Length: 161
Image (cartoon, rainbow, N blue to C red; front, side, top):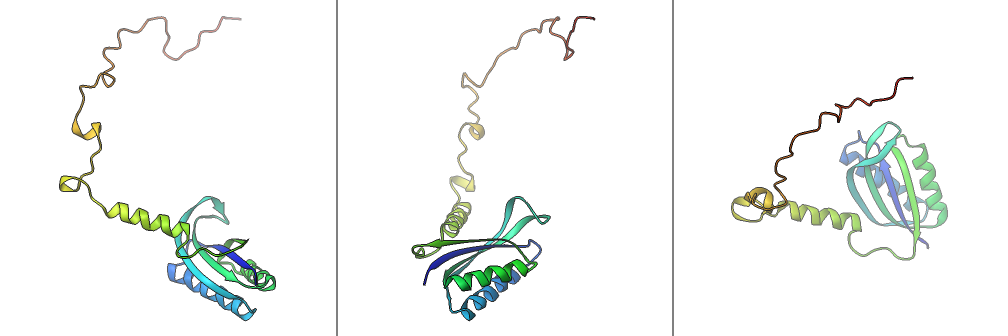
């Protein structure tokens, strides 16, 4: 059977549990049509690039499907009827990724970095800003000097007609 990656964006006012329950109901639809769901991932509530049906955010769900084309068509039909679904994207792939998807890998590496603390007292070394290295030559611009009187204060001078 062909392999698909299926991503769904659900409404922002759903809870994470409701969004995951939505993914389970979609998995049941695929199973009833003779397919199988290899992996289900909840990517979380993320900001949308633009508003979709008055929503600024959406719950992202990702499913790896091993199903016939008729099962995917039926799944997309049901999702089109469902009011909780904002957008759907299905892509046919040659093989599914082993392990977590790239989105989940990026999220876990961010969480590891945010939990890490560097330096004494947990402060990160921010370079010149926090150490007070103000003696650098390019930091001090010096005196600006006096402004010329004829360089008006924002008014443009036009010749009278």
